[in-house]
Image 1 (cartoon, rainbow, N blue to C red):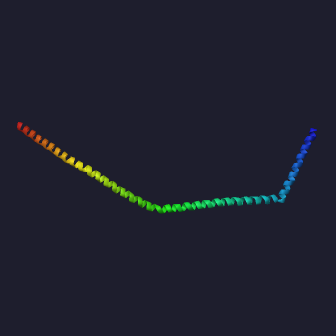
Image 2: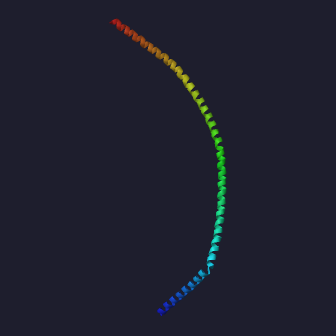
Image 3: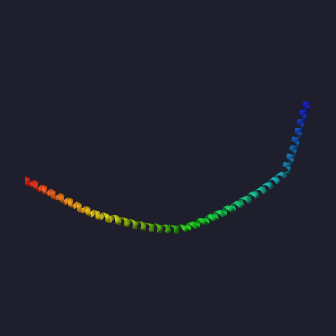
Length: 143
């Protein structure tokens, strides 16, 4: 019985394969499935084109907006540079005024101190010179 059961299963399987081969052969010869596949792909292609077109439009508007913004900023740059130059020049003048005031104040104090220091050093040097003259005169006299 098993032999017959296996034979029946093999026969069923062979009959299914033959019917499927026949159906496949008729589809290939008929060519209808090619037309269906082509139509399906055309529909999908149109959908993809719509998606790409909408995305492309969005990208174009973004790029145009950014281009206008960059052009506006480029026009502002020379004005900003001159404004910064003026600002830095005024700050430099202010700093020079402050430094001149500080130098003047410290320079006046130094000059007063230096005058008194000069007088004191003059007295010391004249006293040293006088002492050295006396010592040289006494030394020559002692000889």
